[in-house]
Length: 238
Image 1 (cartoon, rainbow, N blue to C red):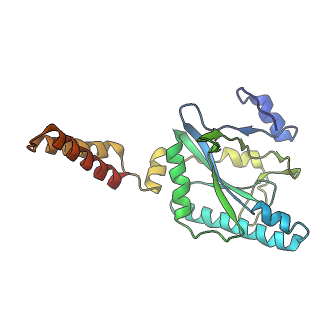
Image 2: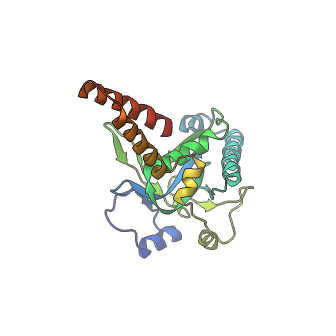
Image 3: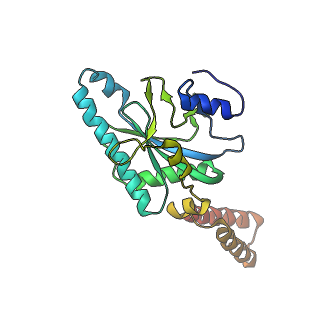
């Protein structure tokens, strides 16, 4: 892979779909918003290496990976959250989320965390991680590309497909993408049980008015009490 600083255009997408190039994107913009994310579900690399000749066992592990992806889709379907399962070409799966608008990455991260909180923990032979366009580096975070769907996995040479519950690729992948439903910001907030910030700040203004009505002997007493209330208030609502 090599880095290209530019805009993803028709030619790049065409080469990706034809399998001539495999394109990964940096979904996180400079304002820390994004319009897509996914959950990666796979077999830990060490477990693959240890059993590289035991294809039967690896097939069992891939089946577990697939069914864990189905569990995630099932829970999301119950909550009315659109999500899509992909075989990304290497005994793994990705559950995709597409957003109606650019949303803060913190909100997308909370969505993925809430999804995993609502289902059982995976088997020890399965690894699950969110793909949000960055990873923890030596000091802080660094950008990390996400491979687009429908390309060729360069590690295995296999095509990546959106698949049904039985693991079969949908017949017309481009038509499938056209029917993809996006997730609204309100849909994310409802799923993670995030309160409306406008309501929060109305309540906070009420707290400030109550503070103004209190009598404090010193300014420092007022500031200490204010900070205590702010900590308690935002711990409750955030």
